[in-house]
Image (cartoon, rainbow, N blue to C red; front, side):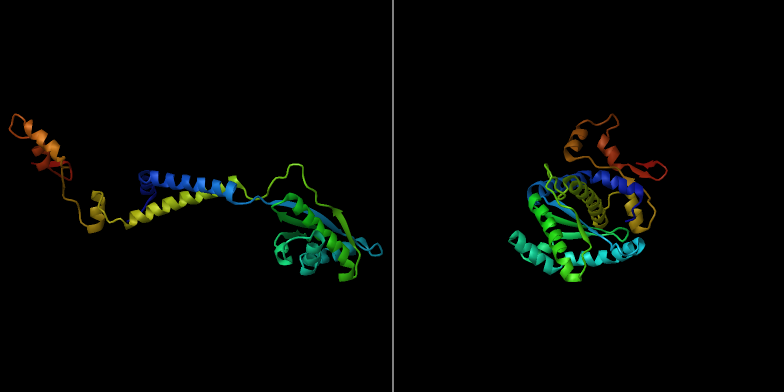
Length: 255
């Protein structure tokens, strides 16, 4: 069966109840998952700044510092730093699990490194971010033999923490859109698998033969009995007229 834009629109109208029900169900499911299943996660950030050596030229300081940004970001996310943070904060988790809560944001155009911690508790997220920044600051001399790091900003707990995840509105919009597309796709697949002949056009497409004529639609049995009791003056019922009429192309009727 071939689908055009007009036929797809008609199909959507015919299956509108199914598509609408599926979309509303997905919307309700996303709302329930966002508010009652997924735990809210909070973010906290701490910033570190790479300083240059005053004995070097300013341009060379910036170039050298930019090359160290990536290296420092990897050191912050190392197991050595994570193990010390676990001991310092007395966290009930492994260093590997703690590292899944940490990410760093660096840029080749600046000397700033940002430590971002995510946790279900906003205060603990702040403590973790500060813990990684302070531990890195305290160990960078022994690791690389340099002392060019400035602890710029500490993570703080806001008075009214706002979770970064989940995002209920975003989840609901995505679920509704996916369900809408899935509903239309399922309807098209079902229509393609349905071999029932629903129109004269389907017969012509299936048999590749021209249509010669059509027979009038039969009335239900109770209507046939009623029409027989009301025969016309010519002695023929309305049902018999309709039943025996054959309509040929060009609106020609043969009785």
